[in-house]
Length: 121
Image (tube, rainbow, N blue to C red; front, side, top):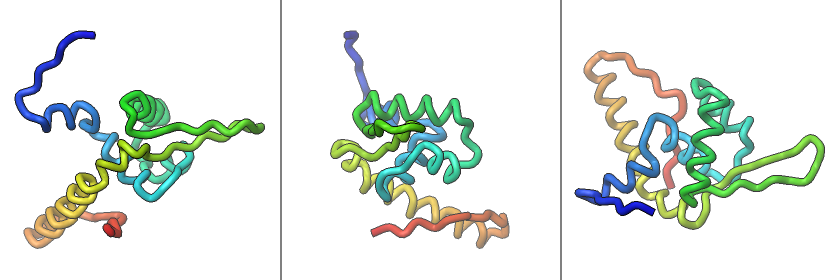
């Protein structure tokens, strides 16, 4: 395994959860187990190929776990691992900040629509 060097800790965080889709997937998994089809419906702009790739990467990093049910047709669901749950505070803060940012944009007459406002606990 090659040595890695980070200048600051956020680089390591972004290496795991960065990109367009991973944080969105993780936010949907905060509510509990989700099947692939549920995630696809919740994130309509993601392709099936990209969703599968992102789920595999998050699983490889130990952030989510995949459970395969032995049945026909096969059923698979995903959930945050205990390690993944440790991201909940960060994800909540990102959601709250984004909602405030959208409110600010709308105050500036930019007409931004937020489909679902998170219920942060």
